[in-house]
Length: 114
Image 1 (cartoon, rainbow, N blue to C red):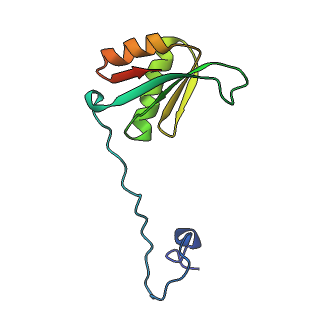
Image 2: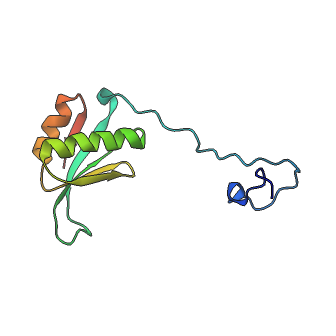
């Protein structure tokens, strides 16, 4: 079997009549991260589907997944707690809305607290 004829590259292609068809995904381009001054983040308190545990949820981040993870690491370290970052959201364990607001505003982010 030739290395060029890998079936995993063709997932999502139903049918092609071309002999040398190359499937190109449109979402290969990675988003650029907006500077902090143009970011509009929302900090809210959330308990849904968390077994009654309270978390501070930061949404509205526009940028790459790596930058989101880096920002979450900084915030978790400054708050002294755990959390996670995925799908454009940062989850910080506990109610740290005021501290997060101060930290993010100091870095130049536009913040709305709910």
